[in-house]
Length: 495
Image (cartoon, rainbow, N blue to C red; front, side):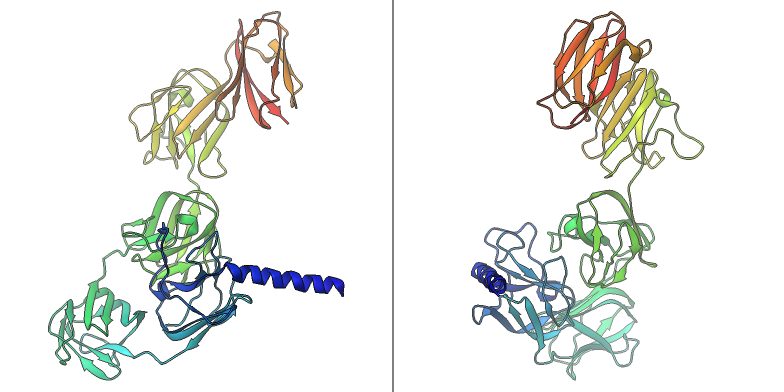
């Protein structure tokens, strides 16, 4: 009994704490006039603010809900002091797990209980039925326009004929004599419509302004979402615009994602969009409330607007050149393929180079490649005519495809045998001991990390040496040990 009372008290205190932090609640999203800007100004205040009825309950009456997703959020913020609620339509216990609400367009009273998280979209007075009618519309019943924003109705991806057009608003017919834009005069004139495919037909029933927006031959498709730099709205067109030559196959190479939800959307608007549940490949679902769960990395993206199949693939990077076994073409994929776990850091271990030249190239083709002028380290140049000069030896090579930094860590050179010295203990917790077995002094020892950065250097000039590793973080290191016979690099581990 005591345990139950304590649990009840804890819940009450948690609820009180949450409510005490909620100063405002608003309805945001494409369905409610647009998402908050990204980045958001410090003094930004959401539109469509709910009125607080009591400690728990909030309400907004007679709000026009258009096509597209929305959420409820508190304190004009997404994080920190912010809370959010989303889920099924028209009612659910809202969560902040990345869900969205996908409502049916109409006029609603929206309520929220901030303690239970329960929200409701309660239908209000029916919105007017708005249609485009006339000989330009193939359907004799007319083309219905859906609510888009307050007093604004829109139809998208519309094919019209040469002919006349008028707007029917709840049975009252209005027209004009200008095209593709104009303002209704209250007279049933005929709009002279030109045949074509239109991305949108829009009418504001309060001002009478209308427009017919001709669709591009290849509509733009972009990738948006928390995992792709943020959700709309953006200043101008969406970032992450994909490219296409036929309006069917869309591609975007080198897209860097973070772990988070994403979607494909067309025409820089929510009218046409595709979600999904699978990553890195799947089939998009038109207007789906589900977001594609992206995983951090850099990808080449392909989307088929006909079949809706999509894929996010990590580009390959290989090392080619006369200093790395030869220049293309090769039979099949390039040799010397590097490995990566995130599409950013690429590595290859134990690669034998000769005196010559090399380049990094992507996807076994010359479309994307990187050259340079310095060795064993430097910053590569995209599609540079310069080749990176190589020095004979065996190397561990690292390439960062974002910063374009590369480094080649020498493991061994000709004439140096690993029997020339011993290293112990390895792994170590405190220090490594180096002992020359050839009676030749160890002239220098350099300890470098996996990125090629020199972290410790000593010049013992004796047959034995100790390197204090206590200040190093745990992980993999390399020791470049030099004697009169040459230089060899060995792998070390700090535990």
